[in-house]
Image 1 (cartoon, rainbow, N blue to C red):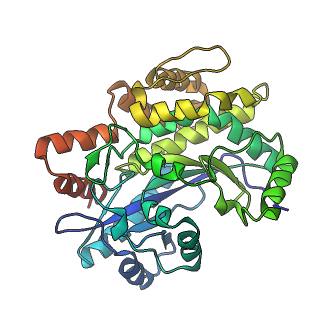
Image 2 (image 1 turned 90 degrees about the horizontal axis):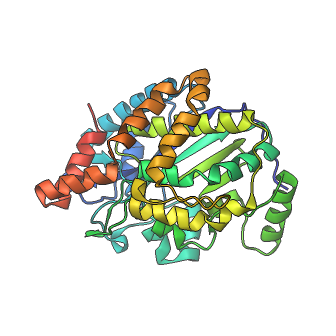
Length: 370
């Protein structure tokens, strides 16, 4: 049975998976082991760890109530990482997928869990060299986590569209705004959480899956949103890693604001019908970004995702003011109104230079602000 660890509601944290590239042609390079050895020589206290392949590294913030404090922590972590990367002549970059790497060139990081994942999923494990932002929101108990996960599901296209930063994959313009989630779709336990109504029902489902030998822990679910009982959070997992930490923090603040709105309005109840259009709405966000449509199963309306985001910002104005996230919402609103996306930035840089290597060089310079 999974015990849900109670945490303070609306606390938050983010995880960012980063690309490690060489400074010759800016392809991915197997640099995580050397980078971690160098970082471990310093007493920094930050949560910095390897990911499934050696061209990835993950950073995670501590628990925060204010997005400004989270930005300050990420800025300090970036400074530490950049210093270490410079000594090793490595580059670090945001972005949901490296534009021209080839999965067969990747090497699984030598950790037991990643070895098991590789044995189970074969080549999919190396194809999992994609880079995401995960957002955690604190919940008082498991019932609240289940409710929040279902209510957030309707807004998943917002997070995909505003974070999309992976238009190129293996040297090709995919025509998607976010190609990253396509790689995750290949895993059998991807998609969305089943429509359970409370934590007891979730435990019943988990125990059945465990008895069948399909899962051993929550880590085996690659859902877009999942409860994280050991942390006492709900985890949003659909975002590409943005090109800057400022965008990453603003997206965390947006999740926090939405969650406050849901926690306070108890008249809002999850509907199973949300999942009738979930996969299609998700596809629209990945393929077209803010120009995609979002089908509302309750009334059949089909607004552009861009308009739905802006309407939601308006709905959350008072909540954001109470929470202190107005500045972050304004930051995102300006980007949406200007149709400013990281995927668009990447495509523009490629149009200017004609070189994906040069695009990654600029991505790396953007993230490694000194």
